[in-house]
Amino acid sequence: MLLPARDVRGLPARLGALVAARLRRCGIDARTIDAEQQAMRPVVIGPTVDRSVLGIMVDFAKAVPYHLEPGQWNDATLELVEGRLAETPCHAARSGDRVIFPEKKAPDLLRSKWLANRPLQPTSGGPIRVM
Image (cartoon, rainbow, N blue to C red; front, top):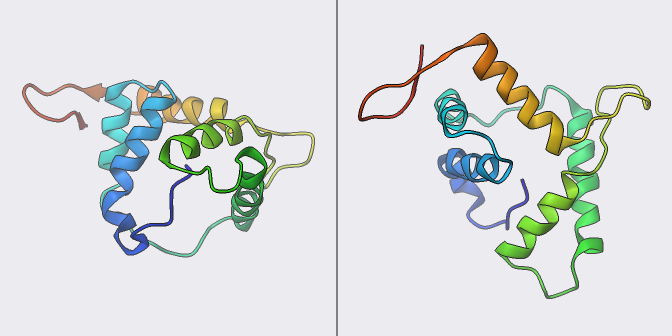
């Protein structure tokens, strides 16, 4: 996800809604998004488990100026760049010949987690609950 660096201290409280919006743009179904949001509570900030992922994030941040003209950045253009970066091949913690494409891998991982391992049970009149 690519976001303006506003209210960084408030990010944990907003993260679930931001992730849900991004997953909707990826075409993820509402039940899976609801399950993912529930699993994200509470949001806790801590050290990374895989520093290679941080390296990819730094590389993505450095690539942003190549997708936008100076002074032409806003929330809508950041979503456009986010989509372009999602098409970038990555190989975090993998050999160079085993790349993934975030736009394809993220939906696959979510579907395999929420639809295969934990069947979703709809509830009436309220949010989806993961049983």
